[in-house]
Length: 384
Image (cartoon, rainbow, N blue to C red; front, side, top):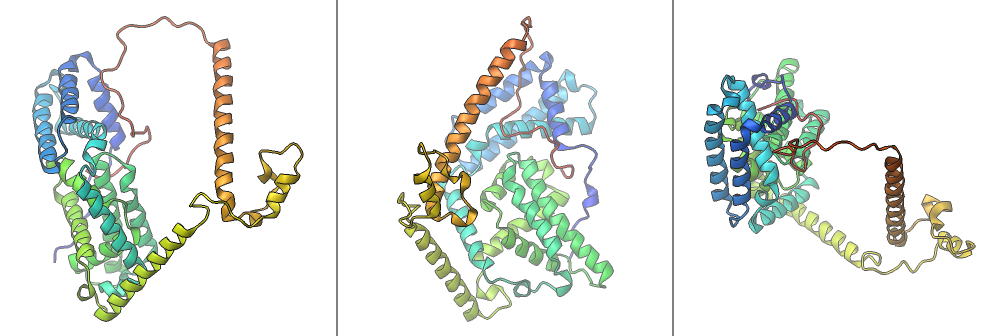
């Protein structure tokens, strides 16, 4: 089997945010007005279509290609290098897909259904599955590395752009790949390529149970520029797709485990989940009822002169019960609302005293604004 590609194949010289904000800066140039109109027109018109993932993906990919041709021929990029053109396209992808995220991510009910089924099955497997059930060699049992890989994979829902979601997958897989390489050097373990890599990725995925795994994979496949789903990125992405498929189809025959034992373990896990759900539904607090058991803290509330609205000030942690949660939440919201109102008043008074009139400057409005959901922190510093 071929070993996983080395992570050294990717450039780390510039972060995703640098690329994105350079794109926005160029688009604010009046000379780019024709490009801006094309982008905004596409975003607006796209919203009128009925969600159809396959058709939507084709529309977006075709738009990428047409815009790439337009940018190559545009005066602002007349002397641009290949890297600069690629950066412009990365910025375009992030801008467009951030704007269209709510319309394109998990856009049909079937996606949400599959996400739920995958997550529920992983929850069951988490209760009993062990590395040896996947034939993972003992030399690769490294909880620290596995945890790091899990954390990278769990970040996937933090981002809206396809590139950044893909980077979460790549960073997770790089951790696993490094684990394999270190084991081969320090433990004289002969790398078996995919035969070693995929089982560890499957186990990490089960341990991580990344949110909306199916929808995230589908989103990347449909909306990441096809020219970038190659080489290392394609290898790692394809492996995670394979891991998800294995988990969905997993049964007693898939594991190094007695089939009867597997079925018993799954049934026990389902029973535990059912009992937990029943207990939650039966909870008086969750049904809008109050805890009938009085506490010393409630007595303090009655004894406070003037009927204090904040009786928990003198309470101890051990005195709290489940029945106090609803009241605590109400008090918390009350405090936050009053604090926010007070802050706005004080800020307004402060600004009205210190602010000096500033002449309005015409023609300074930006053509493209930063999409909601993007932040000013430098994004992942690695990857395609």
